[in-house]
Length: 385
Ligand SMILES: Cc1cc2nc3c(=O)[nH]c(=O)nc-3n(C[C@H](O)[C@H](O)[C@H](O)COP(=O)(O)OP(=O)(O)OC[C@H]3O[C@@H](n4cnc5c(N)ncnc54)[C@H](O)[C@@H]3O)c2cc1C
Picture 1 (cartoon, rainbow, N blue to C red):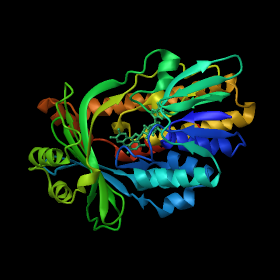
Picture 2 (cartoon, helix red, strand yellow):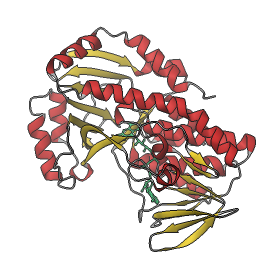
Picture 3 (cartoon, protein in one colour):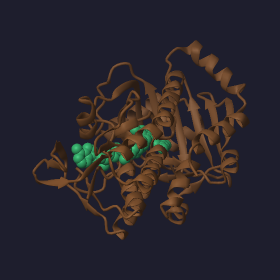
Picture 4 (cartoon, rainbow, N blue to C red):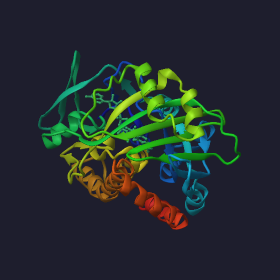
């Protein structure tokens, strides 16, 4: 029996992919019920490729929204360029879809249940002890369990598996804040666009998930972790209203339609890429192994790629220490590139220097977005298929 720690996107997708290879898995999740951090995600073609392999394509298509362009503006509504998502889709032969995170998790969960995989909630892993042929997993307030292999999909902020493998699991604060959520937001056009507004060290992004709703993220430079009451949604909404009151009309429409219970605030962290994700039959995947910034737009997509790659390698050589080593060697370069790309964009977007932002905006206006679309599509689909 293989134990997967964490029932996020990486843990659930990996459980499905391994069970489809007839590997018996069980999942342990620290929360009492399914929970979701973040409002929504864009499933780029690489994610759709994996979801298709997992047998989830039809359900995801029925629960998500097709996007056509990503339109960038400055905070005065001057256009900075448009990326054709349709071009990315044409290049890969797969669609890019936006989806609420809660929907994606529900679809994965439904599939996990249909496959008869055990999922133990309220099981917060505290430590692992290695014996000759097995491991003991200790949980807070629950009896210990033994297992033959461990896959840590326990996220970016305090992964017990990362701590076990590296003796350190501290994520790196990248000096910006995100306040995010879901809003009533009418998309009037037949070709829905992601709207991305760039200010000076500030950003407001809007991603439609239907003709009537969108998820959104406001972000700003924040050198020290600010004294932000992350649970006071009233305070967060007032802060947004004052910070973005002079931004373009779509931002104002969105702010007036915010669903208060969806609002969350996060100080944004990632991990420095690290070489080795496994020791014997203990492996880390997903954000625990390679957390990238939201500016990469690829965290969930890379978590899904992990699931597909791990199942593929295990199919070829069995579930053993060598397979785990090969998996981390396979995944390191691409996930490190995603991390670096996310950092480069975050440094540029959340740069508080007005002159640097002006230069950045000029560069954006002069970019070859056709070439960017092709390069992104080719990079994301690299190694898949
Ligand atoms: C603001 C923001 C916006 C984002 N937007 C996008 C986007 O548009 N597109 C995209 O592709 N990605 C996006 N991402 C990234 C993406 O959400 C993550 O990369 C992805 O969810 C990683 O999934 P995961 O399963 O590895 O980790 P998580 O989703 O963090 O899941 C980890 C799970 O492990 C559980 N857990 C933790 N510790 C323990 C323990 N000790 N014992 C048992 N269980 C434990 C947690 O409760 C959780 O359920 C965004 C991230 C952020 C922060």
